[in-house]
Structure formats: C-alpha cells, structure tokens
Length: 427
Image (tube, rainbow, N blue to C red; front, side):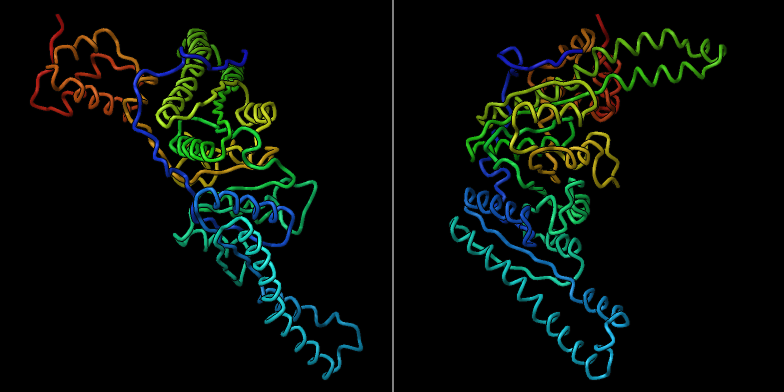
C-alpha cells in the first residue's frame, strides 16, 4: 500500500460544525517541574512562552526528598571512616546533616524558583512557587491533580540524564498517571512552533481533544497544524496466516475459512483505509469550523512507526496525541502507541487527558452510510421532524457500532424510541 495524502477540495466536508471556541486549550495555568536539568530549563522556557501567549501564569514546582536523605544518611553511618564514629564526631555529623536537610534542600529549591521567576518575568508572565517534600513524581502528581492547573510541563529527563534512555523514570511515572494534559519537552529539540504541530488521530475522543488543542495553539503561534492517521493492515494478514496453520480440515470446513479469508482481505484493504480517512475528514471539519487550515495525511504500517516517520519528514516541533486511544479500557493508564511515541519521537510531545466528542452529524456524515431502503423509510417521515428523526436513528446506530444504517436498523430504532409507532412499510 502507498501513503495517501488528503488534500484539496474533494476531501472537504459539506456543512460546518459549531465554531471552535477561541479559548480552547488556552492553558493559562501552567505547572512546570523544576530540577535544574537541561530538560527542565527547556521546559521552563516553553512554559513561559505558552503562558505569555495566553495571558497566563506559571507555577514552578520542586520536590525534594528530605526524609529519604535523612534515612539514607542514618543507614550509611556504619560506613563512615573511623575518625567520624566517635560519639562527639558522630553527633556533630548528624547536626551538620540535619542542617543540610532542613535548610540546604530548601535553599536549593528556592534557587530553582528564583531562576524560574526571573525567566517568567522576562517573558512578562506571573510566577508562583510550590515546594514539596516527598517522592518527586508523587509531589508533581499531587499538584497536577489539585485542580489549580491546566497543563503540566516537564522535561523528558532530569539530572540523572542517561543517553541510552529516552525518558527519565519521573517523566514516565508522571505521564502515565497525570490527570491533566502533559507536555513532555526534549532537550535539544525545536522550539514549539518552529515546525508543524502534528496530531495523531485515531477517532478517539482524546485524539480529537488533542486536535482542538493543536488548532488553538497553532493559531496562537502562527504554526501550521497537521493531522496524521495510521492503520496497520499487515497484522490482520499475519493473524489469518497463523490461524490457517493450526486449523484442521473439519474446522476449515465449518468456518469456510477460505471464503472468510477472502472477505476479510477485501474488508481490510478497503475498510480500514476508509475508517481512518473518515477520522481525518472529521478532523478537517473541526479545523474548518475554527478557521484553521489542516494538512491531513493517511499512512499505513505500525501506527507509532508510521507516525514517527511522518513527524521526522515534516520536521514537527510538537506531536500531540491522546494518552489513550480508541480501544482503551477504563483502567488503562497510557496506550501502546502513545507510549512508544513518547519514547521515540524526536520532538516534544503533548499527551491529551481531555475528551472531545465531535457533533454526531459531523461524525455520521463521514463514518455512517445509509442503504437505499433505509433512506426510503426516512423519506416517509414528515419533513418538519425528519432531521430530528435522522439524528435519533444515527445516535441509535452509533451506540450499537453500526457503520451502515439499514431498514432493519430504522425499524429497530423506531421500536425502541417510539414503541407505539408501527414501522413504515416499503412500497
């Protein structure tokens, strides 16, 4: 299969959605994690830029583990050189260490904040401080979940920089659990807006939430916005091939396996591409409603690999995606593609925590088809209520996963929604 680009008027939707609110993804209350690392420095700079563009404020947070250091020192006392083990010398070392714990770590934290405040003042942004004692990721998550912030900004790595690891442990733990949008900043990486903002669309509410954030951010920064959707047809062929190896003759005959394989191949060849193309077209309708041009691209292959290649090709400055995707269960903390992209993307990445459900008519226009028989049934509905009935039937079909509305679906919807009404007879 070859990559297919969606460009031109033929891909534009008829009709318009509700206008995109001007304040979508304003991110006025930004929380930025500080630890003195290069990545944190870059994150601070991006946070200040984003807040300045939205008349917002930055709240810096530094978490230090005083109790952990105190416990570790006590554990190591037995390993002190002999000259420090005497009663007087040991008590002196304890006092010095206590002073370091009680005042020293706080002074270090204040120094980080002083630097953060100076950077924000230079950008004309208000600055607040949070000092927290405990596990670093725990303190950051507690602040992020307080309801006082719209976006968490943190570096991909901290002071324990490891060239072999794309993400630090704090970043991974926070990204998995954070209840608000998370912007993970890499250093070195392009400044956000220096290249296109690319959104990974998979039809999930969180991916459309990420799209709305990208549209608002692109409008504010004057940066182009791209949407890319990727599907993997090859997995299905592989799965059928593996199944074929283990089926005995009776099973093959019972399931009519060869016929099913041919039908499945036809569905995969055309069906998956159509589904993911429709996600992009819905995205384009959302962008059109907000007055933002959206460049759309459809790719095949492993989604995280295909999306990764695309952002490298276009020189993306930011990748935006939902933390979880279309097939996530309620307990999932992060989707597989999102996590792989977070680890491998060469640019900064924003994980969306919020959902956005496009209007039903917009989704249905691109994802649901009507048979002639179903359309004929609908034509018998009085004109003044036809739009309302169509919407009700679409809602009914959507809730049951139908992508084609048949006369049977119309009758079933009528029976459920209007139990006293008789289905219209054909002819």
